[in-house]
Structure formats: structure tokens, C-alpha cells
Image (cartoon, rainbow, N blue to C red; front, side):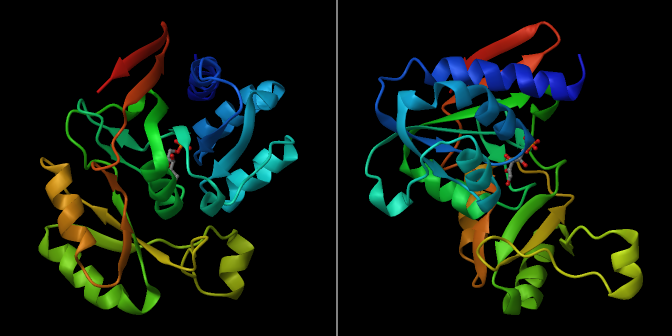
Length: 236
Ligand code: 5RP
């Protein structure tokens, strides 16, 4: 089974998981290729939910295309579950997220939800977080000062650039990737994150940081993880 098939498999397992929730509630929906598989699998059953809250413009667009109702998070007071992928997840349910740049809204929606259902293939499971460069969303004018603070932690910091085609690059120099919130992303490589909760708190305190892509306070409650022999369900 290739990685796309594993994502599809876990997307279908997540559909079955959320359809066990009582009907008529709102569902939080994440961002990325695995979350997309979940959205596509859930689409025929959308009437089970009164609406969704979305973690990015890309997810909103996909949900609307399938005919889901997308609500403003400010209108929602009860969110039984949030379903999203991860870039890495450790044996305790702590995660690195933000590979797709949607970490801030993902963390907001996760904080509203009673349970975070993480969906991924087994390649995302790691003993210690940090092989995947840690995304940190920042206010653009704070790039210099935040980069220096992150370097003090031992990381190698790079500004995420927007994906450009070769012909774009010939005409204009590389430009910063801009998030849905108008922020920039610093990717911090080379960290070995033995205490995710402490590092999350520390980075949150740096002036100019909008959100760090460490999800320790908002860690997974349930993990659905696919490999060649099927989908396993873990709880934390
Ligand atoms: C986006 C995310 C994604 O959940 C994460 O990057 C995993 O994406 P994919 O399912 O495409 O591997 O955090 O900001």
C-alpha cells in the first residue's frame, strides 16, 4: 500500500469514528492531505452534522465544495471532536503540526474541542519529536528577533518560502509563504524535543510569536494510525 492509500484508509476510519457521535452536532475539521481524505470520505454522510468549523481557507473551500455547512467558530459553543493530521506524533500524543501552515487556526479549533482525533499513517509516529522542522508562525516584523531567540534553543531557523514555479523564480526572487492570518512561518530544524509542554510554553512567551506548532497542551486524545495491515486506534 502506498502513502496515499494509507491516508485514504485512515480517512475512512475517522469517518466511521465520528459517525458514532450523536447526530446534529458540529465537527471540527483539520487541514492537509490526510484531512482531505477524511473530508472526502465523510461527504456522503454530511447530514449527520449540523455544521463544521474549519481550520483553514483550503479546508473551508473543500468543505463547501462538498456541500458541508461551515460555521464561524465564534458561533460555536460545543464541539465534540476535532479531526486532523500531524507531521509527527510521539508515544504520549504530543504532536508537531503546521507543515501546511495552518497551525494557528488548527490550535484554536483543537482548543474548542472535547477530543482531538489525530489521523495519520505510521510514518508520522516517532519516539521523540523534532526530526520534522518545528513550524512557528510569527508577526513578519519580528522575524529577526524571534529567529535569534529560536537559535538560542539550538535550532537552525529558516523562513518558509512560498512554493513558486521555476518561471516565477526567474522573474521574482523567492517570497515568504504567507499564512491565512497574514503571518510568516519560521521552520526550526535540529531540535530534539524531550519536553514538548515546556518548549511550547517557552516559545509561546517570545514576543512576535503567533503560534508554535507544538501541540502538547492540545495533544491528541485519540490516534487512528494506518499501516499495511490496517488501522489501529490508540488513546492517550
Ligand atoms: C497543516 C498540518 C497538517 O495536519 C500536517 O502538516 C499533516 O499534513 P498531511 O496530512 O498532508 O501529511 O498541520 O498545518
